[in-house]
Image (tube, rainbow, N blue to C red):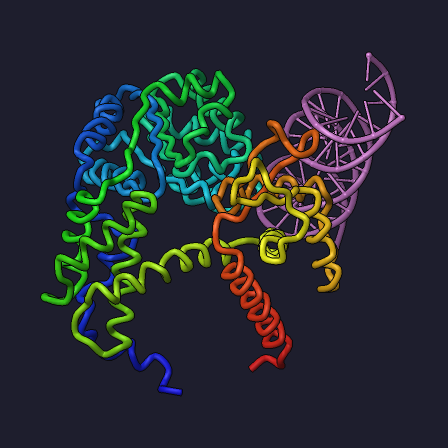
Length: 409
DNA sequence: CCTCCACAGGAAGCGCAGGAGT
DNA sequence: ACTCCTGCGCTTCCTGTGGAGG
């Protein structure tokens, strides 16, 4: 085995700045999003003048630049010499309940509230007092807002806050990639959140090409990537979903493959290999972040998809669906064989809903179902790969546990 | 037609962890 | 050190829904 980390210190022939290629990187120029950016700014500018702005709701698929645009505007606002406008950027994947969001807001601006132990009401009152102190305008950005469990409560609390506050106010910016999200919302929350609506369309192949080109010129060394490779990566990503993140991932992966081969340039062949790997990796990252039992459920789904199980086919379509109840039974037997206690059926249904929201499985509702009222579930990725991944992660975890059991150094 | 089955998803309640107040 | 709160994950209980079968 080569010396570990040796590559880290060796300068790359391929990459100039990997940071530029990361999906979290916010470039100083966002292409094809001028309209959206001015729209966001227009909604927020009243806040900057000390009036309450309009709430904005932003939606669009993953990798259409929603988060980047928001972060871009947020940074711009932070740079402005306006003291009274304050911003909280909340990633709802982490802060996924009313309580967590509120304490995130509080700890953003009042460091002594970083700790736990305060009740909702107390935090709420603190925030209100803080806003009233000098008529602040608070802009709260809720990224991936659909993940919040008790969103209706949160929105109610925040709008309620607005009427409680004598001077100053709160402006909400909601971001979601779930298009159907609108229908699931309580009508009252809907009307508050959707004061202003903004769609982010998927990128087409030519747009993706330009975006890639922009990043590539700074992320890679000169003459490493040719136009043909860029076009191919863009075309693949556009065909898949119009996801800029996927396009970037493909390019990065292609770079890694070229680097491993020791070649000094990326060709179309690396790109097409990378495209296959990239999607698996996205799935792997998603699943790797899952709590144990949700992962086991995905594992059960994967196993049953492979073995064929007792799935039912729906109107001669190729896609076979699994029945929710049978997946649960399988999940229970898996946990038993691992000598672990299975979670209850109710919680399992909640997990299924979570997994669906994360796009790991697709579940079609009752409709003209096989049975009265059930969910028809299908894995969003190749079951063989998923099975492999989860087995590996389970193995890794037990290895970690063994290490933890070793005497401490 | 009615009843039963198999499931969805809401509501309530439980024990636990962990901070605050005393 | 203790009691009092609170949120959180989870279970228990419940009502609703629609096809299968009598």
